[in-house]
Length: 141
Image 1: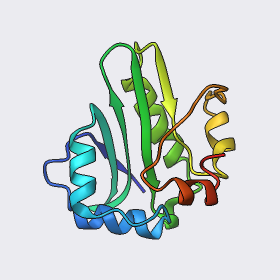
Image 2: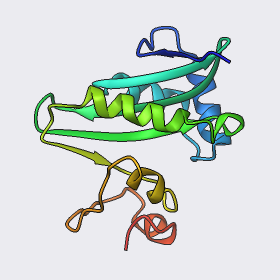
Image 3: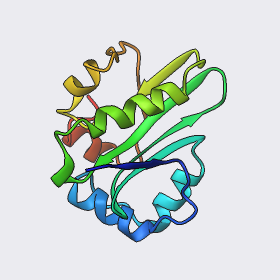
C-alpha cells in the first residue's frame, strides 16, 4: 500500500473526518467543529489510502513560541502500521523552530508520545468546558 500525505484540506469531506474520530474512538466531533478547528490550525496533515481518509492531525502554532499538537487520529484498521508516528513527526517537523511543542494525549496513550520524545510537564494546567467529565475520564486531576 502506498499512502498519500497532504496538508491541503480544500477538498476534505468533513463528515468523513467526523466519522473517523467516532470510530477511532476519539469521541463525537461534528463536521462543522472539525472544519473550524483544522482550518484555524497553522499546521495540519491528512493521510489517504486510495482516496479513503485514514488519518489526520493538526498543530495550533504562533510561528515562534508555542505549537500545540492535537487531534491525532488514525483509522482503527490502519493503527499499528506507524502512521500515527509519521503523522506526529510531520507535525513536529512543521513546528520546528518553536520554543516549545506541547502535546495533549488521550489518557492511556502517553507511552506512544514518550517514545516520540515528549516529556511530562509538571506545571501543565487546564480549564475544560466540562470539568467533571474531564476529571472522570482521567484527563484532569
